[in-house]
Length: 236
Image 1: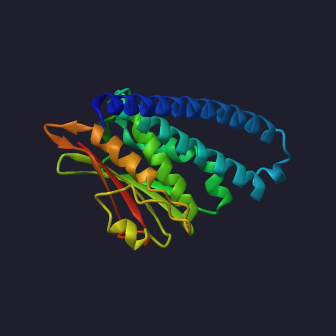
Image 2 (image 1 turned 60 degrees about the vertical axis):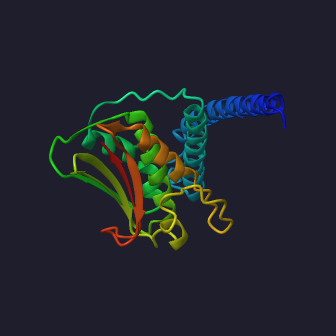
């Protein structure tokens, strides 16, 4: 294959990626409008219908779909170097509280208790809150899917890195995922519906955070204090 043909293929691939990214962006906007309309409609429902199973499904799946679209757009922007990192000082307790608040109604409908703790009062982190929040939100969403009755968020410092962890009391991560810690593109699992996209996205966002040559990373384990899986993101 000539260099001209290779260049043409690369240009076509980039063009197709741009089309996909544009379509995903439009889908996310449309979904946002649907979620707003649903919230307005839900507010008019009788109180006894607010916690109905159907209501919970709509809210959960809408947020899950929105999270996947955010990840796809984020990965595209990372691929074309258009996802700038904007770290700021963040109060971790407020960050956790806001993250859980978005899932308040869904957690209640699934009968899941949520809590958070930080190693020191007033703990501050220095990271991009929007990007890290998209990672944490995805993990919370998955935890809701697999937890039995509880989810816990906690933060501490470890070797001068801020660690944010999400634990649940579910059955934990599959052995195949635990064994692939260095490769989060795991392929489609038809039994679980998992593509590994969320973990790959989390790993890439963590990597964007670096200080003095130390890069952020993620880990997963089944050593949760709640007895299930635990996701950790390390931020230098």
